[in-house]
Image 1 (cartoon, protein in one colour):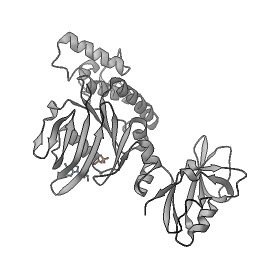
Image 2 (cartoon, rainbow, N blue to C red):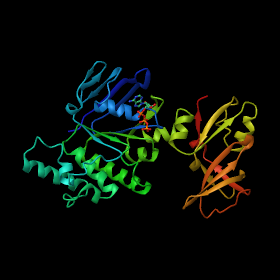
Image 3 (cartoon, rainbow, N blue to C red):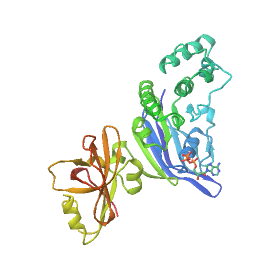
Image 4 (cartoon, rainbow, N blue to C red):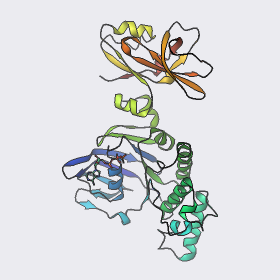
Length: 341
Ligand SMILES: Nc1ncnc2c1ncn2[C@@H]1O[C@H](COP(=O)(O)OP(=O)(O)OP(=O)(O)O)[C@@H](O)[C@H]1O
């Protein structure tokens, strides 16, 4: 049922404007990929190109080894075996849940269709809801119906366009995990579009981070978080401090932080995530607290370094110190990432 997806050097233009430039992405059958990036970076454009709603200017898109898009050639959307789930669910308001889910099953006879609809409702945890109308469901339930409708015709590929962004944040994370498990259970290949790195982390096995139409870095969530290729990736994937070690003054700061081995003498920058900085009562490294935020189980402390630089530290909430006092910390140098110039 599921297909291997390959985008090879795909560019999409709107007139003179290049919305996606030489984008490559490769997903194995059954893998969940993610196009991640800030607003306007070209995510939806690429998803629409994969679905067949947007022509591509160059490159090619292959699904299950079959070329579905290249410059001047495009298999129509309805022949691509691609299912879609949208941000606003896009359910038919005048159809009940059963008829919404069965919408793409016109080719099946009535009993087979009804059986498939029930299977799908069971799969998404909505057995017994078939007679309800969309307005009688919560947002999370509506999105599950949308998912059931998209999966019912057994697509080779499922495309999800910001599927959780209209839901509140707690439900979003819960549903993202549920949907990942569900997709893995069905074995369908999927591409998620989102601007939210937590959603990407919760669902995707492979992420392509885009900026201004280009892939800046592609890899596993772990690689993008822990081994960002530049400051944009580092900042987009999570909190952290980018510390500059200036030429000349670098040795002192590096020694102060216990990062002598990381320092090279020449000017360079490193990324230090908050979890690499731990509260350690007996540490000689004591830094002034400039701000703190309560995070429930932890405080996020902002600490002053020389040259107006800041370091972030996540400390357990029993470490309850006020702004202006000194926080003793240790930095795990193995988790410090050297950034390119
Ligand atoms: N039909 C169109 N005609 C001209 N330009 C367009 C068209 N659709 C999108 N664009 C432009 O292409 C760029 C990429 O848009 P796209 O919708 O793919 O971004 P996105 O990453 O999905 O953004 P968002 O997260 O805000 O939905 C934007 O600069 C947008 O203004």
